[in-house]
Structure formats: structure tokens, C-alpha cells
Length: 379
Image (tube, rainbow, N blue to C red):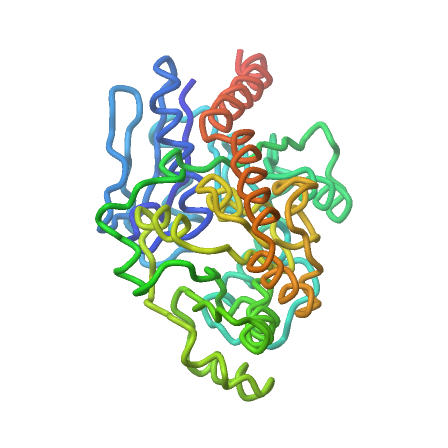
């Protein structure tokens, strides 16, 4: 087989969720499969995080914008290199492409009711692009991959996609996420003292940043320890709006926002955290949930969408729309040492059920199935 994989953004320095997923899939396939040919199509960037090997070819395609890259440069290059299957990995695909398509549709949040308070230009442009493209490509896809049973059922129900065209393949997590000795105290690059709460919130409404900060403010009022809250960088105006609306000025001196946290430092950040707050309103999978569990860090997560499926029934599951539930679990972890240790062990065992190796094995099986379907039509 000649398999094309769209991985446009993996060379950018500040990678995000979908970028890491396809990057890890490519690296695992590179080790797992030496028989088939892979053509990985990327946009040039500073972080050359994967290199060509004997049967994996990294093809750099230049284009001034994401839509032009995907709609023009990608199908043109895939046809030029003679790929049998083109796997588009980030929710969208070329509208005009006569190659057999496999699409990873991580979620369909862009088709769901939208929070009008989202003022991020980048997120809004992505929302409009996906909303325009996805309905036009679904019928052209041989298979549609998604990343949890929750999301698969959601897609089939809302988009009327037959079950035989859907495939559920769980994501994994990197093996360097584990309890570790940190002799270099890497976490100190971001926060002076260990034992903090860690939260990866941003301005995306689904991340539930406002309710989580309200919960943290109530925690500070009731806790004798008053742990710091480490967050990735948050727009100051957005933060100020939350503080003013909710009258929670007490959180200002306790929040640490060091900016972008590089992925290779995250294991140390999780390991030295007291607990991880993964209180999203909606996730199709939730890799950070697994990463924290694998590091032995208790996680407070939501009882919505895919999070109970990934975290397991024994995880700390709260209603993310109720800030008081988040606060209560923060305080319980602090007050109940047995409960705290039990949650550490639950997370360590749960994380063992997921791996990028399993993800790559299932991907390869899917490619083989699609290839067998299309081969007779070419004879």
C-alpha cells in the first residue's frame, strides 16, 4: 500500500491536541510497519519532530493558508505521489479529491450550539471552516475514525452515518508520562513550589475556565493550605473579566501563568502537582486526563461526554456546571489522605489500558481493510 497521511501542523513549535495525535501515530507506524509506503504531508516549520525513514517519506508542502494547503496543495501532492489512500487527520479534508479518503473526525463540536462569548478570531475561523467543509466531505470518506464511543454515537446520531462506515480508535499517551524522579526540578521553570493544582484552561468555552476559577476562589476561602493554581497562559482581559464578573479578586495572587508549557516538561508538571483539574464541559477523548493519571496525579474530571469513558467509573467525576462540586473535591483530596492515595492508584491502573502502539495497530488494520475494498475496483 501507498498511504498518504495529512499532518499539516506537526512542525509548528506550539502544537495542540490533534497535532500530537497524528505525530504519535506516525512515529508508531514508522516502527510498526516496514512493508507499506507512507507519504506524510506537512507544512514547513521550525520543529522537525519526525524524519523520513526507509518507507516513511516526509513531504513538505508550502501554501500561504490552511484552506489553500488542504484544498489545493494536499490533493495535488497526494495524486503526484500515487497514494492509494489519503488519511486526513484533523476533522477536515479536500472537497475535490478522487482518492479514497479516510477521515479522523475527532468531534463535531462545530455543529453543536455555540457559546456566543467566544471572541477568539482563530477559534471562530476554524469553526466556520469546519462547518463549511465537513458536510461536503462525509459521503466521500471510505471510513470515518473517531476517538471514543461517546463521540462515535454522537456522530452517527447527528450526521446519520451508517455504523459500517465508522471506526472507533482510542488515542494513547506518551510513555514518558509516568511517576518520575525530577532531580533537575524542571517544574521550577514554571512555578516555585510543588503541591499546586494544575489546570489547562483557555478561552474556549468548552474548557469551563470561568466555573473552575470560581471553584478555586471558593477553595481558597475554605482551605488552610491554600495551594497555588498553575495555568497555561490566559489572555489577561479574559481573566480580568472572569474576576470582575464573579467578584473573586482573591485568586489573583495565587494564580501562576508561565505561558506555553512545552510537552517534554509536562510529565514533571503533572508529577509535582497535588491534583489536576480537567473540568471541561465536553471532550471527545481527553489525552491530558490520561497523562495526569499515568503520572500518579489524582484528577478531578467531569461526568459529561467522553470523560467517564476514558477516566473510568472510579475516577472523581463532578458536574462541571456546578462549581461547588469542584471545590468540594479539591477540599476532600486535601483532607482525606486515604482517598487521595486511592485516586492515585486508580489513575495509574486506568492509564495502562491505553497506548499509541495499540492506536497504530488499529490504524494499520483499518488501512488494510480499506485497501482490500478498493483493490478489486482497480483491477
